[in-house]
Length: 616
Image (cartoon, rainbow, N blue to C red; front, top):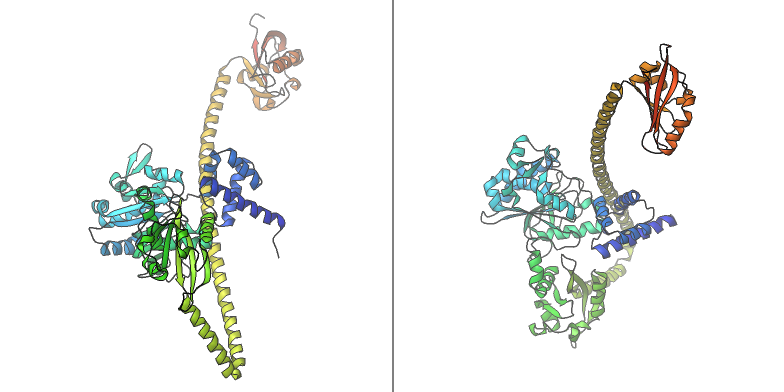
């Protein structure tokens, strides 16, 4: 059953909006899960009064400040110190001692907190190591990198200032040991603060920090789709030292990645990088020196990135189309030498033989993704044919600059030959053992059923994992909304107290006035009837509240005042005192002087001042 056309149209418009945000602001949301991402964007659209994605895109184009509001809505910065205390206890008792024991005292223990939000997790890591090493040793041996894509959250993290409520999870001893009062806030202690470096970093696009002993990325992966999660985990594995630790959130898992990670503790989501797993290490990316590295030498950066990409024959071509690197395997395979470095790529025979590569390079740059050419055949005179899978990867820096391309030649000749031999052997076996075909068919059917069952179980497991991540995301959104409601409730309580105090004050003022004071609203209904009016006419305030003044039955003939009151209410002008013969609450005749004044302006009500004329 296909989705409704309006849903397809909405999805297409959402993708166009995400592409616009990526191209105009350099922020790539395309790897995020669509359900939660669409929900957060819709929430912001409702706030500013838009129903359709194209209309909201026009609003973004004309209002640059709206981008920051959108980012703050999408990036849910829910964090705290020692969040999920059982997991942190395991980290302190098992992981931290192991890292300290196996690291030379002369070397730094490098820690990366990816998706650190406003910094609580990075400072928690500093506290955990300081508790084990002591503060003096921690300031010498531990360096922590806190990264996030949210600049506003990073600015808060750099200050190291937090309200008392944020420190509630910390034991009293830790609060006094690691935080100092700073006005109404508390500041993280300076000596440890200098060992924590914060910087903007996009885990989906930017080069990872290298040689990391412990990488904490908690409740961040759950916002990305499966493809983005795979790429991020690959980058994390590249960043970690062999036997380094990866610390994830309770709603996150490493599914089918046993080639690169071993499980240290599944319950607390702690994994260890496998020795010898994954790709070769050697390229160094350091957050603190990132700008210097980019400015130092573009060609050296291309070379380092290309060498880190694959172990096979490989070329590096910079953005000007000049050969920047030729590794040893490529020299042997294609007869190249070090003299070819610096030459235009199109002058080399390998650029068009065994296949045209220049168009593939242009495609990789244009689409900013890897381009794969499979089963490419190369035949040299007098030699057997060779087969290659050719992969062209654009090389993107942490600033999003496209500095070149890496071309990798994966030799599949032996695999192709083996496939052909296997096919011939299968044909021979099929001929020789025709009587076993029925049995083979039955076994194949059973195998397919088992495979189908396994796939269904894997699908169910992934759906459960996705549901768990969605629930965790919803929980964080609810937590964020609850904090906003608590703030609003506190403001309303303060406002209510102020209004009560003001009302009590004005009631006291009116009660202290000896003359009768009556306040009428714009419809000339009684809103206030002070004590002087009660004593003069014998009517209580609760008897006349919101009653039509001219329908009240008391000793003052109100019809005489009708025209003056309406004129004052309509024009907003004051009317002088008018003497009227009346009868007080005791039935005694008196002459009452009545003055009429506007309450605020035309149509907003009047104030009547009633005094007994002492001369009467």
